[in-house]
Image 1 (cartoon, rainbow, N blue to C red):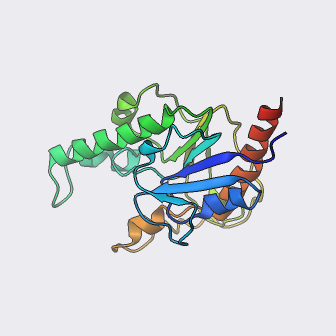
Image 2: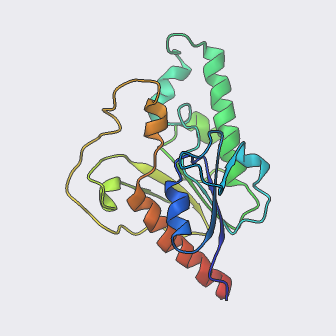
Length: 210
């Protein structure tokens, strides 16, 4: 019986989820357009779509570009922000949907894609779209913060909360504007990452052994 999985963590530069899986003995790799923040040699800098067919047991896409897909930004599709055109907004939507679609329909048996709540224009453009299996909050996994995260799951169970704590501070929402804001907003919560590694990793190993 195998005790490790080949795990690809997509759209992650921080290594938070990769390290959580590696700590449990899995062959975990991250991939992002940005280089690895921790300079790990288990990181691939580039487009995740180039390696989706490389024989992974589990694919987790942690934070695909979601600015144009999420419900909170749908207003920009009718009135673009300063410095952008309407055509640019819709083109960015198409590109975001294409990436989500390619990951969701990847040739991997078990897939989890994380994203905020989507608007209808995004849903209409994603191939084989289904509604998210669940949404979770950081405070269910040891972080006293509010940031609703939806998971689209394929052949994986819903995550079970591991450490419900006090605190409902929307730190991410209140983050000051700046050049690193988008980067910091995409940083994953270690408590959720550890739950993924433990629960989804354990589930996949049992399924392989069955």
